[in-house]
Image 1 (spheres, one colour):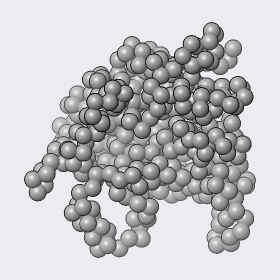
Image 2 (cartoon, one colour):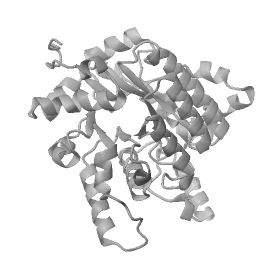
Image 3 (cartoon, one colour):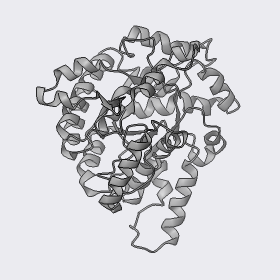
Image 4 (tube, helix red, strand yellow):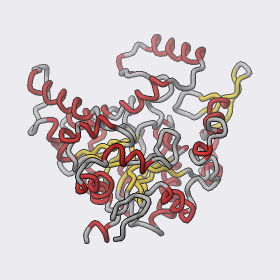
Length: 399
C-alpha cells in the first residue's frame, strides 16, 4: 500500500467510534401502531418546550436545537453533528469522502440519535425499534463495504432473551459486534439474568461494545444504586431535577464517560469473564487513562479484602488483558501509561461527527499524541487492534 499523503502512513486508519443517524420518522412509521406514541416527542411544561425521550430526563428544545446549530459561525462546527448532512451518514459515497478528509478509512459504527434506545422503558418498543435500526445498518453497511465498516447491533436491556434472539439474528445478518450501555440500573451486569446473553455472545463470537452517552447515566444522574434509594427520596430527587431544568453540566458529561468503569468492573468482579473466557468487550468513547488505576484497584482489593469476595481464577487485571479493549480520542494520559494498558489493548477513534470528537483535527492530534511512538505501536493503535477485533480490512491485515 502506498503512503497516504494526508496521514503519512502506509496503512488504513480505522476509527473505533463513528455514528449514523437513522431516518427516525420512517422507522417510527414502520413500528406497530400501538408503539408509535412511545417514540420521542415534544411536550410543553410551564410554557417551556421539551423533547421527551422515554427513559431519559426531558431535554429543553432550546438546548437540543442549540446543540444542533453549533457555536456561532464556526465552519468546523457546521461539519459536525450531521448539521449539513440530512442523510445522517447513510449515504456511503458522501460518508467515505467526509471521513477520508479526516484520514479515516474504516469504522466501527454506532447510533447517533438512537444512542438512548437502551434507556427506553418499554421492552417491546426496544425490541422492535432495535430490529428496525439493525436492519437499516445491515442494509447500508453490510451489503456494500463489509470489510470497511463494523456496525454495532443494538440489544435490549429489559428482556435478556430478547437480547439473545437479536444477537443470533445479528450474527446471521453479518454483524461482528453489538452495543450495550455501560450502566443498566434496573439490571446490573453482575446479575445472573445476563448469563444467557454473555453465553450467546461468547458462542457467536460477537464483540460487546459498551458505548457511553447512551441515556442511562445522562443529564444529571450521578453514581448511585437505585435498589437502595428509598422511594420517597427517589421521588424527591425527580422533583428537584424537574424544578432545576438543567439540560447538561460539564460534570455529568464527564461522569458519563467515567461510567465505562462500571461494566469492566462488574464483568471482572462478578466472575463473568471467568465463566466466559472467550467473551470480548470494548469500552467506547470513554478515553482510557483511568484503566490502569481501575485494574490496580481491582487487584489490590481482591488480594486485601475478605468480605465475601468471589474467588477468581486469575488476577482481575489479567481478565482485561485477555478479553478487554479500551478506546481513546485525545487522551495523553492513556498514551503516557500505555505500558500499563498494553499496546495491543487500545484503539483510536475520532467519534465522527460529534462535537466532542476530533473530526478534521484528527491527524494533528494523532501526530501530537503518538507520533513519537515506534511505527509498529502506532500501527497497532490506529489499525491492527481494531482490524483484528472487528474483522476489518482483512486483505491488508492478513497480507
